Image (cartoon, rainbow, N blue to C red):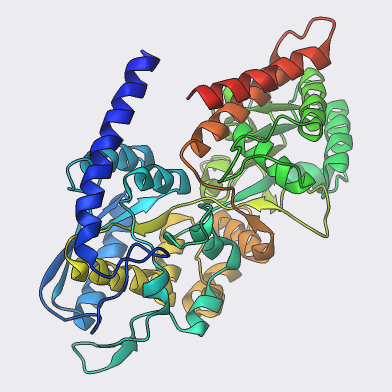
Length: 473
């Protein structure tokens, strides 16, 4: 079955390469540095239709529609058609098929590994020439704007989010950040206050805290960590230890530093200090919000899922405990590292260069609009990608309401914005998603598996198996 799947993928992208070669040939201005060069004159203002694939539900689509109307006041000849495709993986799978026949959309939600996959067919437009363009664009209301980004617009992006667009090994820009999330530490503030517990700032403090909580409530599992893959990768970043590379040898995670923290977390699991999503069998927020049975008092999960980390209110609307939120523990508090997640957008190459330019104008409008970023953030639970959104009056009032009850999403966003200098992204290449999956499996297996009398040998084998699986796939 794996061989058939591999052959199908090879065939699909052989076709994609042919399609992309034909499509790229229509650009005329293609250079060795970029696969899209803005034609002389830039935007011609003629009627053009662009298609946008995303995963938004009805509430977020309503926000999007409002801002499409605002965009069309400026650019009435750019007709935006959007399609809600399903999950992020559904978007990836549909576009991968459409690339083979040159029928991909103009813009799409994406994660870095999706873009690396599309780039096997050379389908994603590089944005460097668009970003740098000094062409003047006249809008329908008579005002003008520069086609590219101004220095102020670039500096307004949260650096870690913007840098994700260049994680593909060639220093070219392929994506713009759209809406983001990260991981945060949720904790039962009521329990912490009652027992005089302090929020851990590093992993040594976390270990001591788990031990203390276990003594207070022997039936509990003090900490739940949703994503084993994120945990492994974050520890690599925090230790400065190799994980992957976009060029050369891709898979670098089989090293002593990484084996050491995996062995440590195995010990935590064996002592009943921690569980993870795959080991627990569900999101660990279920333990954190449990009203009876086994409970946890801390949960590390997505900042966008804050409402799922809040317990159900009683008939009077009161919550059984107050939720606290903090930055996840660090190896070095002076050099914090927290993962950047959430969708970006990419633009696809087309024979008609005006489709690419129109797509750029629309993507630029959404990603640099303070008002859109504020409204979308409040509606979605994701955090805005612009620093200046914090000064927006509506969003600032939203943040002021932050608490561990009704406005837990605002509290989560506030923590995210307080740690903007800590965000990191991993190298993106065809196979980077496999690496994430395999290190997650590796960590879960190493934590829970029967190691017999030789734990080191067991962990060594788990690492080598993960490397072998990455290279095979």
